Length: 70
Figure (tube, rainbow, N blue to C red):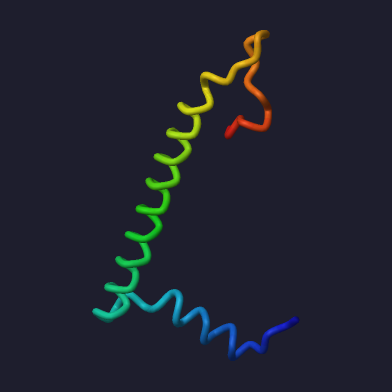
């Protein structure tokens, strides 16, 4: 489905407002805060899962490929 150019411009203006106005700077700060907190939460979750499944190593010393996260 191809969107008209006007709709694409409208979506871009909403998601990425100009930083010259107070509202734009505030929205950008909220977006950056959201991105950073999500990244940190995912990192904590991944570390927790990795520690939980580290004890599940096979007799050959290999981790089950289904449990490897990276």
